[in-house]
Every structure is written in structure tokens, then in C-alpha cells.
Length: 231
Length: 224
Image 1 (cartoon, one colour):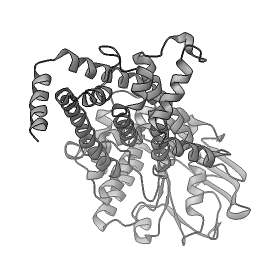
Image 2: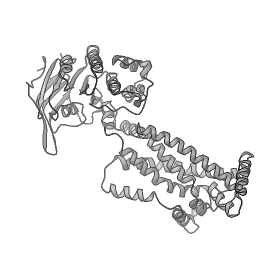
Image 3: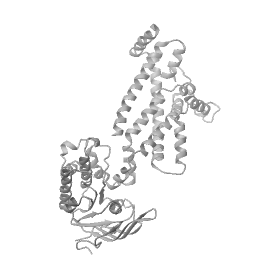
Image 4: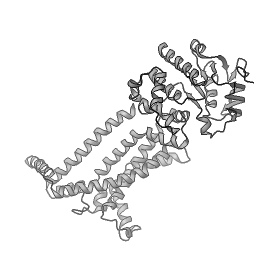
């Protein structure tokens, strides 16, 4: 038990002394997840809106496909993106393998189905009186569209938080596509995996505390939004 | 008196079933027409057609002398409908009442929003900052009415505006409706089961049954 307690104490020291290695991993995590979240939201919200708002042939098949992708294993995504970005792969010339943007590409693929599925669900479950209300108040089709997205905002933020939770805690993509390169692509999760393997609990626990703080913040905000969305 | 609304041989059908058949109807500015009748008699369908939320299966609908085009946003902005169970946007009361003005590109909406809230008997200082879920059923109904009255529409359509309201709220809505008519010469078509209330606000009441007008369906007051 002593080594766990010692690990916690050392973890606090690393965090509050501004240890470079610790903050390098935190920065790589923030950088990659910010890129991937931006891409997931920019692509996922419009796609989710289209999926939830419009009726078209094959919609059920698309919904089933998106729902299936929700449980896409991160190592499989890592493998696919690695195959795409490797020197001989179709996107090898981009030079993105073992870079933070390369990791972000894989993480965006991880987050995208979550954003699409939850946005579609949010739009589908909006009150059926909404479009009629907007029309009777004089909104044109473009204003109806924008107000509909605005009405679904709490659920869309919730979708973003769920995607962020999954992205920030994944290991497989970061390890395979990023290569866990110190000072460069080493993220919180890959650093924890590596340091624990080496028996260095302090850095692992310090970074684990950061992840827990992120998870706690996400959950507190998400439960507040859930309450607001239900009202 | 000029004509604001004219319906000629309007009919509507859903899935091949005829639900509405109105040979003729006209309305002048400032007139309040009551529609009475049992559930399923076509009152709400008629209001939806006049509100231009759906096109009729047959017949002609003229608004301010012009035949209404389905995609005519400008014409639709002169008419507004308050449905039986109004929906409030997930925003403050102020934002709800201001929404219709903002989509019309109007600026400096604050005085008009305050005036509309006062008209329906809600203190703007108390209610404007409230969120949509902080209102009772009667307050929700009155905020939704204020969101229509603030637009100063040429034609206001009300579908069961007093359903499930207490007598005090119903009286406040009656006062607001009559004040809007007196102030802006707003014409109104009001569907209601509440006959005493409807008698108190309407210039004339038409009874509907099975999609048809039971009373004389000829044009109203001086409009030929």
C-alpha cells in the first residue's frame, strides 16, 4: 500500500511543481483532443442534424451503421489510420504518422459517430410543435433550421462532452498512430500505460488525477445539462 | 371597409378523406370571428390553412387581396397562430416574445416586448428574465399570446386559447385580445369550446361540424 500512497504524494509534487514531462503529456492530450473535437463537431453536428431532421430511403440502415460505430474499438481505428498514414499507405505522403494531427485524425473518427448519433437523436426528439411555432412567428426556412439547432443545443453540448470523454481517455489510437514519442506525441493515457509498465507510479498517478479531474468536470457539467434539456 | 381575408371553395383532405369544405368566408380588419363545434369538426384545420401552414387541397385563399402562395414568407408574416398547447422556445420569456420581431430584422425590441407582456397582464420586470420552465400553464399561454401580439399582425388566429386555464387567466386573455383589436384593428379567428368566453369576444360565431359550416357561410359584415 505504501507505494500507492507514495505515488499519490509524488503525483501532487509533479503536478504542482510544474514538471516538464507531466505537462508535456497534458499539452499533447489537450492539443490532440482539441483538434479532434473541432473536426468531430464541424462534421458531426451537420450530419447528425440531417440524419435526425430529414426522412430518406435507407435512414434506418444509416442509423444502425452509426450506432454500430459507437462501439468501434480504438485499436481497430488506430490500425486503420496507421494503415492509411504509413509511408506506403494512401495518405503516406501527408507525413501525419507519429504526429499530433495524425492522432487527432484517429480520435475524430472515434468521436464522430458519438456526435452524429446523439445530435440525430436530439433533433428527432425535439418537440413536434417547434417547426409550426417558428413558422407562425414568421421564421423563414433558414431561420427555422437555425432555431432548431439552437433548441437542441443542450443535447448537442452533451454529445460533445460524451465524445470528449471518450477521446481524452483512449489509448489505442494515440499509441498506434502517435507512437508515444516523449515530448512530442506522448499523451496522458499513453504516458500512464508506459510509466506503469516501468513501475513508475508517481507520473502515472499524477496524470491519472488529471484525467479524473477532467472526467469529474465533464460529468458535473453533463448532469446539469441533462437536467436543463429535460425541462 | 377593406377585406383582409377571403376563402373561396376551400377544401382539405388527408389520405383521401375530406376533412374541410368551406364554400366562402371573408373577414374585415378588426372583426373577430368565433368558431365553435365539436372535436374533429375542422376548426383547427381551417386555422392551419388560414395561417398558411399547409396549402388547401382545392380552392382559393386570398389575404389582403392577394392569392396566397405557399412559399410567401412576407404574406405569412402578417398572420400568426396561437395553438392550443403553445410551445415556448428554451429561452427566457423576453427572448420568446422578441423572437418574431428579430426574425423580421427589427431592432430596439425591448419597449415592444415590455408593452406586449403588460398587455397580457404579466409584469415585464418580473417575467421578462424568467426561463421557459419557470412558468405556470396560464403564464405560458399568456407569454405565447404576447409573442403573437407583439408582432401586431393583421390577422390573429387563436386555437382554444382558454383550454385548461382558470377563469382569471381566461379573462386576462380576453382583455388582451380585445385591447389588440382596438389598438391595431387586428382581425381574429378564434376557435373555442368555451362558449361564454367566445360570446364575450366575438362579433359573430360560426358553428362547424364534420368539416362544414353549419351556419350561414356567407361573407361577414359588409364584405361581399
